[in-house]
Image 1: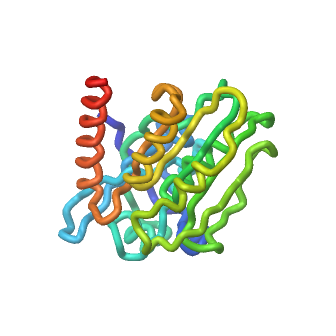
Image 2: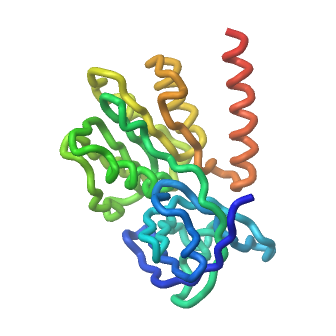
Length: 250
């Protein structure tokens, strides 16, 4: 059973046109575990029928006093974006967690990060925690040039921004770019998160084509084009089930 924390909005501001940062505080955080950046919490929200729904958001940072979450800002579409766009300083929110961290294996020879804006908070934490000697790629899809963020990263990690209008969904702009890059020497750690079809494409690329063991990568879908969060989770479950069956039949 995840722990419950009742928190207060300390600040809420727009980082870029499509990303909002919300800082939360409160006495409940005295029992929140340290060193949880890249993990996640479930935020208690309300849907259009005013029923409680819980949505997962990456812990961007936690300094022992303030818990920071980044929200993709797509206006009134979705309970998370709607809440983040209207939450005032002093308003309260309930969260649950924390959940498992999503960090790349630091022992890899090089790193191959990819994701859209939904993955940007977790991807950013990964880049910040890499050793200074780390090398590889971080390919990030954003809907507008103005959505580029200054990200701390090792000099050997090449940041590649892919600008793609979010109205064109699903698309292969991000995954096509990833597939086009030169494969480096040594054993990589692929890390990809984003839209459902993109995750499937990257699973095919890294596991089936590049023959990387599934234990040596992180692949996840955070949303599914044209579907609700509940629909995405169902599709994700069924896809994983079919994939296991396919691998068993080989």
